[in-house]
Every structure is written in C-alpha cells, then in structure tokens.
Length: 223
Length: 179
Image (cartoon, rainbow over all chains, first blue to last red; front, side, top):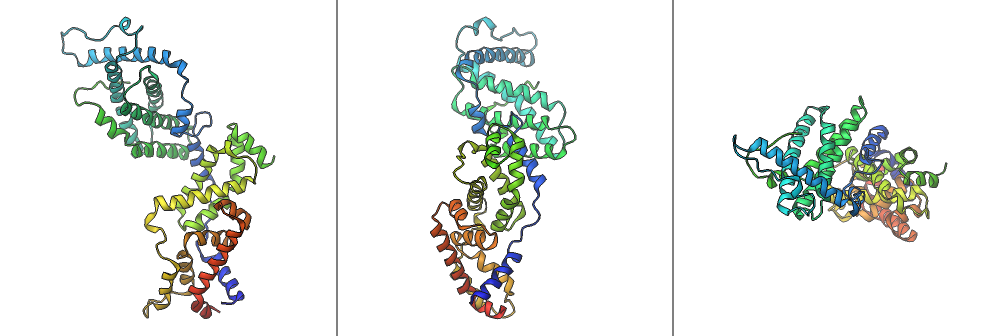
C-alpha cells in the first residue's frame, strides 16, 4: 500500500470508523453532578463517606445517642410486640447511660433499625418504578441516616458483618437524601439521583443482606 | 482564569470551576471514548466515570502536565479498564492475523471496503489500536499519547508504525481495489 493509499484509507476511517455523535453535554453533566453529590460538593463514594466520618472523640456522644436509640427501640418493641397485659421489658435509661453497651443490646438496636430502614428502601424501590419519590422520603431517610451513623460510631461497635452492612446502608441513604434534595422540577436530576440510589441498593444487595440479618417475626415499622 | 487556577478552585470544592473544566474538555474526551468503544451508552458512561475520577483525584494533580493531558490519561485508563471489565465478550480476541480471513470469505459474503477497514481496525491488538485511534483518527500528539498510556514517546511512535503496518498487511488487497 502506498502512502497515498494510506492517506485515503485514514480519511475514510476518520469519517466512517465509530464516528462520534454530538456530545450529550448537558445529560452527562447532570449525571456527573449527581455523582459529585449534594453533601458539600463531595463525591458520594464509600471512601468519601469513610473519610468524612466523625473523629473518635464523638464516639461517647455516639454511644449515648445509640443508647437513647436502643431505649426508643425498646419502648417501641414493648409497645408493638408485647402481648396485652404483659409487663414492660424495655431497659431503663439509667442502666445504659454510664456503661458501655452490651453487644447484644447494640445488635438488637441495629436489627430494629434495619427493619425500619427496609421499609424505606422498599418504598423507594417501588416509587422508582413509578418514576417519583414520596415527599416524606427525604426527612425519613435523613433520620435513618443519622441513626445509622450513630450505630456505626457507637463505642464497642457492632460485629463486622453488621458494620459492613451499616456502611453500605449509609451510602445508599446518602444517595436517597440526594434524591430528596434535588431541586423541585428538575426531573433529570431526580432521575439520575434515583438511578444512583437504586444502583447502589442493587449492587450492594442491601435489601437482601438486611433480610438475612433480620429475624422473621412481628416487626415494628415506623419512622 | 487558566486551567491550573480552575483546578485549584475545583480542588476546594468549587463545582462551577469544575464545570468550566468539563465544558472545555468534554467534547474531546467523549469523542475519544466513542472512537474506542463505538457505543454511545458506553461512551457516555466512560466519559462520566472519567470526570468523576478526575474530581476525586484533583488533589493528586501536580500541574506537571496540562490538565487536558492528565484528563485524557484518566479517560483512556477508564475506557481500557472498563472494556476489559464490563465488556469482556467484546474484547478483541482476534489478532490481526485473524483479520486475514477477510480475504478468504466465501463468495456472496464479501464485505465492502468500509467494512473491511472497520474490521481490520477492530482486529488490531489493543496497544496498537489505541495509539492508532488517538493519533491518526483523533489527532493527539505522540507526547500526550505517551503520557496517557504511560509509555515513552518513542514507544508511541513505534506502536503507530506497527499499527499501520498491520493494517497495510491486512488491507493490502482491499486497498488495491479501493485505489
């Protein structure tokens, strides 16, 4: 092949070989922007979340709040699962405020938290199929996100399996909060945020793992 | 404001500055991604991944090279890794020698010259194809290709030479018809 022929071939290839269409600038930017996250411009990646985690000094507060969560959960459990007429069995606050939590109590709080979170995730997944998000999802997800972080930061900590699940759950909840925070009327942003949240939910098999951890039986499903 | 200043602002979390960098570079990145994968959805995904990775790695940009060069190196890495991971079944399994079968197709099934060209380029081993696409089709200079691929400039030139040689061998007969 002579140089002239090679030049002709290259000209042909420039026009015919995978000719790029017009760049979908706006569509791609909206997705990139969603991935950069709504939390102070940080990328919503697990690594970012880990880096932004509160320092150990907050663990005492974390434990106190987790203990409070345990108390609330305990009361909730007592109210919703105890047979009528049975004595209340929830632990009192004074028993947990000055000592490290027992792993069993912490795990029970985490499991109950997962039950509540499962309800939210199921709702979001169903909403996504309809291409919308219930207005109540935002505050609900923010509350669960706070509780997730408190459990993660609790002194002593939960077991590694639960810890991994809580970390992944935290990321998914951040993404759901991102959906709720999308500007009203910006359907593209909502759609891309929702896509990310569902992708995270699916890829990390969060719902399946929650169902594996949560024992079958009566559940308290509240916000 | 130059790229270095924009990078500095973006590093501090300024998404407006990052958008300016995106606007200035996205066309070239998308074109390159599309040339390499030939699929719009994949090209979009890889372009987006490249910019997100750039955002995450802004702290590592030292300014030794132009921002665009650094961005292109990340984009090429995203595409090559993405093609290997996500689309293994489309990974080029044929060597260019296999492209030789094009001259032996049964009667009635012979592709046109344009098809032969495309299949021959598709059949190039990855290291040659990438340089060929970047230099001959997208006009990247060897210095930038070398940096993107982490090789010496001489290696980039050698790979281009080899890519063209392989295409000549594979397309010799077709090109005589073409000429």
